[in-house]
Image 1 (spheres, one colour):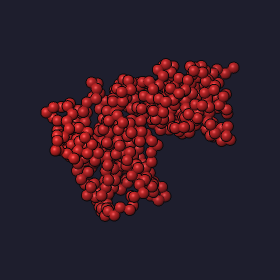
Image 2 (tube, rainbow, N blue to C red):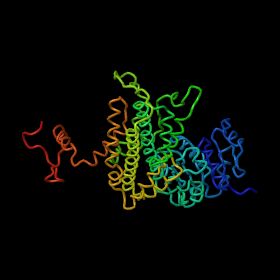
Image 3 (cartoon, rainbow, N blue to C red):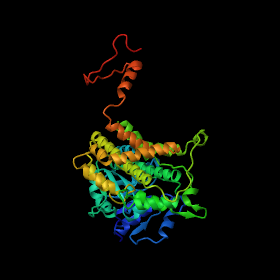
Image 4 (cartoon, rainbow, N blue to C red):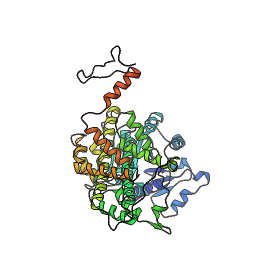
Length: 466
């Protein structure tokens, strides 16, 4: 009689099928099921026809799938975030016991994960997985939260399939109860948005100001990937810019609209709710919505198109663009960590920021050499010195020049601009917020504070204001 299987994977999209293969390749017995099987679909059959390990078993109905697992049963759900997750849980719940473990491996909102933990009787883990389909197969970064006992009983599987850092430790960590894992993944995605937008803005500047070809920029990005900007996103940007089709460079045939699946929105709402300024990541999220704006082609602005192509780009502008991306990486990382620190404090998660940085060292989309260096500064906690030391005078001047050049050429650089504004904001000895206090007092009697009596609330005296 066949032994019970170690874990079940429900959902065989690109991520699900590759995570199932990864688990099986590590020697675990894996049950797989896809919900279209009972509806006449054959995603499961297509998957298995490609040749899979002998320790991976298909099931055509959900009851047999769940009951094929050893106790406590572990079911990894790999479906689209949202109501689909609840539908799957409701489907498998009749065959599971309270001691069994449900693992949500999608991009669920951490708030939804908190709700599900309190709603369903089984032990629950929210597992943020980064690395795309390739990482899922060869070693992803995994950010986990929820039941600690469930983590303790599942960690052997997670640690076996996760990417490995330079010291061979797994890029996999339990960050706390409730939705801590999915929260860390949300922050990861927010940082990812800012990094991607900074690379896109640099591409636009080099293309429209310097008149460089896609191949030229691909080569430059490849060179930068060998320097301080070494990162997964810089590498793939170099590679995709070099892709060709029958029409020429593929990027020129792609519609200039960038969509998103909600984590950028979740991040933005979260940072505003907790009062943590993250303008760079919010700007990157807004840029994606702007790309879809119905007003884009109807604003009467005489844009300056690219200059005539030059024999070679000037060293100065290349260095300034390089510095602009570098500054964005630093600020996005800091803003993300700032939010983690505050939410962790209020939620009682006690998240170790160095562990967060460690999980992002390999296997994930935001893998970047600079983050390894920045993480060394987290030993004593998060400090604004990370920003002030990283954004040197030369880098800030280069960033400012690129923003100015972009403005004269009609090129939007919302993320670059937000980075400079953020730096000036946190380094300013005095902001104009005092005037806003008086404006609010004038129309709403909200009160104001004085620098000579901090903490006390004052109101206009008789005859002042409205």
